Length: 445
Image 1 (cartoon, rainbow, N blue to C red):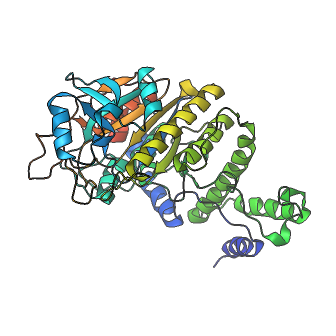
Image 2: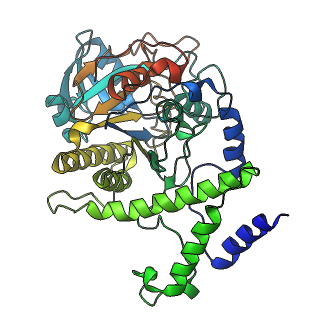
Image 3: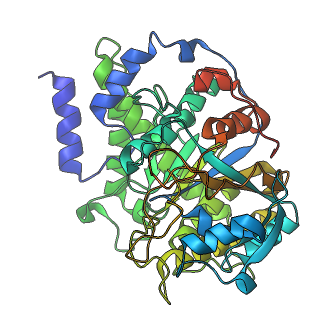
């Protein structure tokens, strides 16, 4: 073992400092760097200079969009009520949102009144019957397909990671994209661009051993020994060792982690809360979006921000009197509303596009446990001032279903059309470089 390795390892071990999560393991980081040397993506230089941001909300588990966007009247509503004897929302409670491309009247679940208001303001769009060929119905495989935009092959990087590699191949910004959560999703994994996974903005900083902290935890920098160890840590990782690429990578990774932590801690101080805009503390999605708002206010040149709301795998007791799928929709409703109003207050609403996705919808009929099983196509949503609001596409038939007694709806819009629209019309990047093909765009931005 070389002296350089021993010194660096021993220092990190003994000093009490802990490296922040950077989204890639050391092995993956090293492997990806080698792959990048021959990657066609990294040779593309489709640099984008706009200041637009994309906020991704993943509804994990397979949202029942049939009970989210509900048919009103005619054969569609008749089929809906016949298939869902106890789960169907009473007609009087449905919130009208307009007509689809075939003239079918549609409405929202009653727990989505604020999203109904965004539709009426033309600041939200519903995209009907989104899916992909030969729906897999496995949570894991279907999520991987959505993450990688590759229904017919296995990929180790995601579509958002691909965008970062194409548009920012040499970015020095360690916060070019951020995941608010514990484990980086596949969609954000890139070949050359590390993305941090941040569970909490407040705790995203170098962790120091209490032996070296000042008596006031809020001002550890006042302790001289603490400062000495930070400076030594930085000096070690700034060492240039081009002949030992692996250690050079680790050094840059550590410095990126340190620099991003400093930028986050400095930047979020720019955010001042407004008493009229309160993120519900009992709403996990709202808590995540509250931190996203702080990053946006910090003006860190971040392009992609990503949060996840889980719990949509509603096989049993989907709509109890309290909780279940209705509560998840209420979370979505309240979180998007308060986040959008906060963006307006910050003067950033015209710079942010919000999209949702879920790996699949649910089958048309409810099951014997008062729940719904894995289906295929589903409605997806986009929100924000840049959105051309309305209803896109046609609501799927609830009687002309996929063959093979699957009881799930056919798709009419490929999910990669949403990606292509966002990449080209919002992020101004050639979608072919990211998706590996051309997909017809949709008129929502």
